[in-house]
Length: 200
Image (cartoon, rainbow, N blue to C red):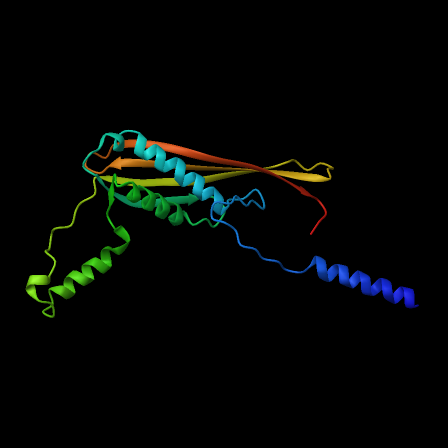
């Protein structure tokens, strides 16, 4: 009876240790992948590839006047909830740091209009008010699409099941005056995972 109780206690201890939660710090440049899905480390490589392409190819490679761009977002055509704005935010930040381009702050237009209206409402000294109709128009529009394809192995008797995930980010730079696409590029992430049919 005593031996039986000891085995029960030991089994419970093993379960408790196996189910305990642990955390650790992860460096921003560390590549951590848990499954075949999109991960934060993918964003860093995607941004680096796209910024390099943008700044080293026509039309931006020959520009000397720091052309003005506006970001109109990346459409998420995947089945996952992926923050595509995080991708465009990092692209914009990296390109601004290069000193080669400027960006219109499209997301703050309403607030800019509200602040301008306030300044002309009588509470702000005339000599300190911003001038109206002096905003800079964008020359290029940056937009794109993120797509994914998932492929699973057909149902057969196997100890492991494999899943293949394919992600493709397409970006394009459009000349707003002419409506012509002046630059386009894509980056791909392909990942395969193997999972046991039985497991936690």
